[in-house]
Length: 305
Length: 239
Image (tube, rainbow over all chains, first blue to last red; front, side, top):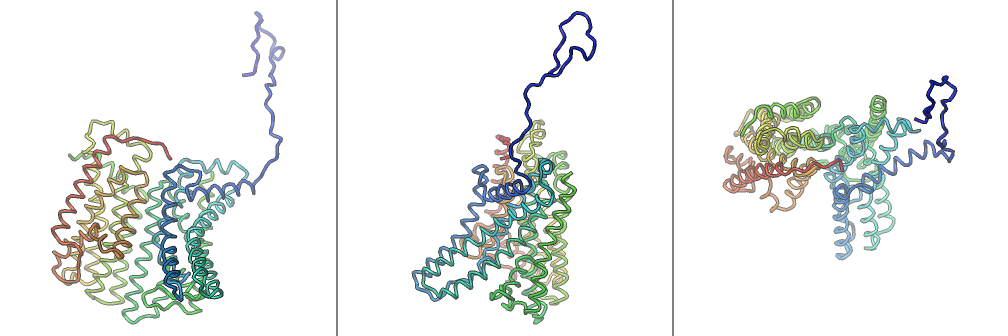
């Protein structure tokens, strides 16, 4: 392009009159922000995206609505507790997420595909990897972002309950302990659900299909497990109940918190796993989180190229 | 009103590749659970009714309905390839009707048939429970397919809204607010099932007449409106 055409009549000797103009392109010599910065940006963008911030109004509706739906029952409970001068909150901190599991499942199902499926569908994943970030950075950023978003979703109502409980002049030490236990439980829940959701979503470029698949895995397993637990309980084989609970994400969380975090189990019999069984629950939960991280890494090794 | 080519393409879109996997996994899980329950608990009518009502009709049928109903048209609208279909000299209501038939058929095959098999495994159709819940699943398939097909033409977030309806409205509100049950496909289907079984194991909060009228009205209205929506479809870019 920058070759100047010769205006001479006779053919010039090559290399004589042709020259390349320097048209002023300059190489970038500013600061290079590097891999950590790119990872942080990807994390914060994904986290904001999980609540629709920085996206269209339409995509803000659902996450915000689910967030409100998540917090309103807590606010109502607090209001009731304050005005009736109750001695305790109507629900435990640890039980709240179990009660609202449908909302949490819907949130994971809608936001996990939002986070990863569109990158696959529009083939933008290779573009990410042409930047300084690597596969592990992408996976970690997305995983951390969805887990943080879920933690915000599940911890916010607990905070509402806690503040309300203090306003209602309930016992400070007791409430703080319950709140802390609740936070540990929802942190584990956030990691587990984010992992499962992302693994399923990362296997399909279709957003709608990803949503249906995530919700099917979360609700059908819970439906199946709670049905089987109810039947095992009614048949008098109560020993089997804790082991059946290992097959659904929400009952795993329920088992962990009833074994170690002072919660009462939400299973039909109300009897949680013993301490030894609780260890198995914790191992399964951590194993699932690690497995979903591993599966995501494997998945993106292929997609990235 | 029925176009075989559109039907063939829709079948292929619905059952192609991984979609068929999840559609097939759910019924298999139901049957596996019924086998386990039968081995654990033996043949018991109440258990059979609980399992078929709680797992098959309340969870499995809506989810398969969402996948089949929205999957029949949603992805096409999403990636814009629906314009090639719409530019053919086929009436829009015909397209919707054909897709509805396909969605109903797929939902029925993947939800009603396993329900029947599970029912027979659970208690050998004692007190007509298997047949009753199969009829309920068949009826619900029609209404769900029509509703979710309409959602697929109305919104890009059809799957989410479909699931919100199926899981939050029917399951959560239905159990808290009795009035919400009148407006629930599941209860309408149960009303029909109650008539079939004649026993007191299958019960519904809605009368048979109300249920039938509402079922027919919802299916017809949803199909008609989906046809109307498709006539004035605007194709928007991704968000």
